[in-house]
Picture 1 (cartoon, rainbow, N blue to C red):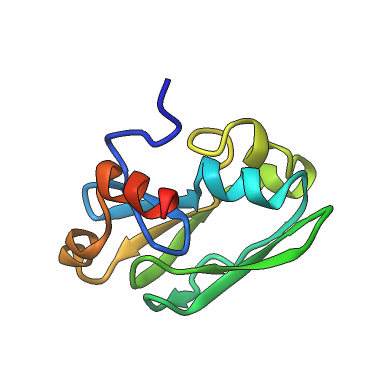
Picture 2 (tube, rainbow, N blue to C red; picture 1 turned 120 degrees about the horizontal axis):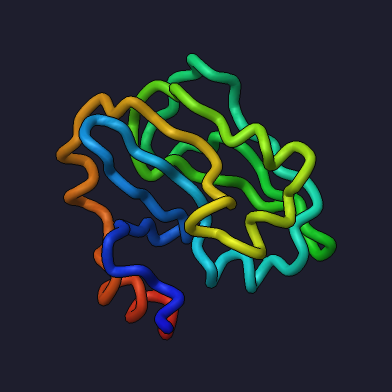
Length: 127
């Protein structure tokens, strides 16, 4: 099974985006969580926060390091995965499902067209 689902878009900073209408769900990729190791804490923005493409919107803390999360899309945070507060390990166990981080009401849905598709992301992580 590929660890890079075909139905998602990807940033070069290893965030994934699942577009559903005007909403974009965002998390970090399998590759990113593998590199980080065991996730012990996730800091996310509050609902209503405006995020801008390429700016940091939170952090992920692992046993190895703390990493910034970079917004792959511009918009307003409309949902937060509050389960990560008590279960940060979901990011390791299920990065594309239970480990999603935020949902954003996209300001401009065409921004998603600038992200990598699965094949391009696989090439990026092999470099």
